[in-house]
Amino acid sequence: MSSNQSAPLVQENGWRKDKSANTLPEVYRSMKIPKHGSWFRKFLAFAGPGYLVAVGYMDPGNWATDLAGGSKFGYSLLFVILLSNLMAILLQALAGKLGIVTGRDLAQACRDHYSKPVSMALWVLCELAIAACDLAEVIGSAIALNLLFGIPLIAGVLLTVVDVLLVLLLQNKGFRFIETLVIVLIVTIGGCFLIEMFWSRPEVGAVMQGFIPTGDIVSDPTMLYIAIGILGATVMPHNLYLHSSIVQTRQYEQTELGKRQAIKYATWDSSIALFFALFINAAILIIAASTFHTTGHTEVAEIEDAYHLLSPMLGTAAASVLFGVALLASGQNSTLTGTLAGQIVMEGFLNIRLKPWLRRLITRMIAVVPAVIVTWIYGAKGTGELLILSQVILSLQLSFAVIPLVKFTSDKKKMGNFANPLWLKILAWVVAVVIAALNIYLLVQTFTG
Image 1 (cartoon, rainbow, N blue to C red):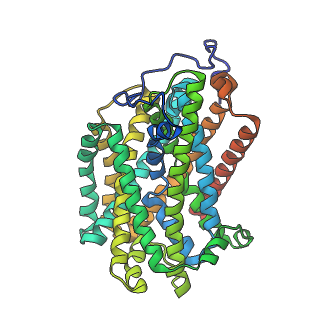
Image 2 (cartoon, rainbow, N blue to C red):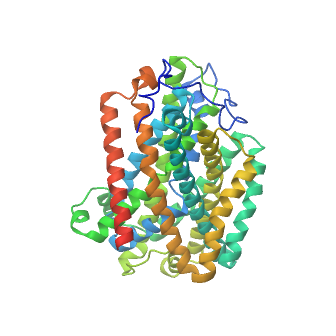
């Protein structure tokens, strides 16, 4: 449904009205870009937002599908992780371009383009997705605290509320501080898995073979289901809203040349950062394949099972500890970006502003309440199933973010000379259709068994 075709007040730039107030106004255009100097110096000034985006591609919600794929099918599904990552690189580049060219994030663009009922529906769906993502972070952090320190799951879930204070403190220190902390946590996660891979000694030839597509994925329903789960859980809808806003923290010149330069460096930033996410997701699958699949433990899909099996199989107690540390870092990293995404979505769709700590507390409580109830009644098994449910909700929302993004960036009236060229338009729509079809299949299979 498109409301801008019937509205008589469409401006020359393709939008119905002037842009509303900037989201994240406290950091909007707060970071200077050097006008002179090497390209590398300019690139460093743009580097940062991509890593906040990459966090969503390595959150605890992705771990279960990677573990299940590696333990059951060895290295065969590595090409699925690569394919989903390439899709993510394309979509995040489009999100960055939308924000840089139009000065609108995806939420503001939807609010402007669609009728109020459609816009409100998109907002509700996005809030559900953010709550689902927050749920995955809550459960992941609680499981990590339980495994590392023996803290009961319910207590761990309740402890995650405390990070509201941490986020509030960090936001007061400036955006570059948040970016730096996120990068440090990503390096921590990557370092843990690099050591784990060294200990697990995967077969290099088999790993390389895993990046080549195989026909088995079509003939084996279970492999297809897990593969679609990996694809569906990788591209995060709230990341598209997040990226289109935080690229505007840079003071790039508001000229065609300045915007082209900003698009180039922002795309490099997000693409390089997403290769870190590719490494981490691939590492989880590789470790599961080399440690569990090769020894006959083909049913390892729970995070707790992987934690307890790693040490005895790799012959060192540090293996499980590093796995738990990486899980905790992943959950805390996702907390930071989830806060920003929630703030952007609410401000963009509704044009209203809540204090960041209050917005975070509301979102956190929406995630904490079901997590506490399920943990109390069903224990660890229940939290695992709740983690899967959170990914299903994210899958359901994804197309409602991807389709508007592709539509807006392909629109010559809205984007001018920056509109997607024909080849990119076709590629973007193919990706959007594939994601929609796979997620519909995943949802049907999840609810019908």
